[in-house]
Amino acid sequence: MAREYDAPDSSAVAQDAVPIEDTRRLILHVADALFARHGYAAVSMNTLVEEISRLRPLTKGSLYYYFADKEVLYLTVLLEKLEQTGQVLAESTTAGDLRACVVALVTTMRRVLPLNFARILADSDEYLGPAARERFEEAGHRHLFGPLIALFERAARDGMLRPSVTPPDAAAALLGLAFSFLAIPFRAAVTTASIEDIIADLLFDGMLVRSG
Image: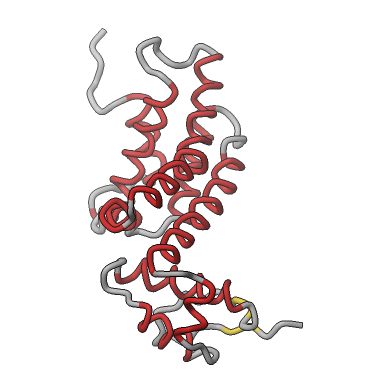
């Protein structure tokens, strides 16, 4: 049975256990935690080797054996994050009626996406080359945007969307609202309702009282 580690409190590594003998997965796990905490520019391959070496011996040559450079490593981290998120989001689109699905989707996003996901997206735009950025954007559309579009396509078939609102428009609106609320550090001080319910209210009803 593979040994597992639980990262110490002082480490930048997340607390969940990873098989320590699985070198590639261990590298990705540590890189994910460091990129999420410090951003792409602040994390060097040397930093990764130092952090991983706290858990098991690793040379810089071994790191390059698995990942040709930092861009390849960063892209792999992003693609795996998107794939894992997409799998969970797809499950949330079966939560019930449209509003229940939206609440479930936002709840899922709060659980699986880091608070600084907006910065991660910005880093990908700034530091990934054209080919890598194209792969990332395609994966984002398939795993993150895709489940939301499918949800609103069903809503459109049921006659629930206004003719002027396309499923991609509705999906983009939901993502924009969700990312905006998830990125606000003081959100707990500005509302007594759940973020999920507020987003659903804004998406379906807006903010202004309707006359008549």
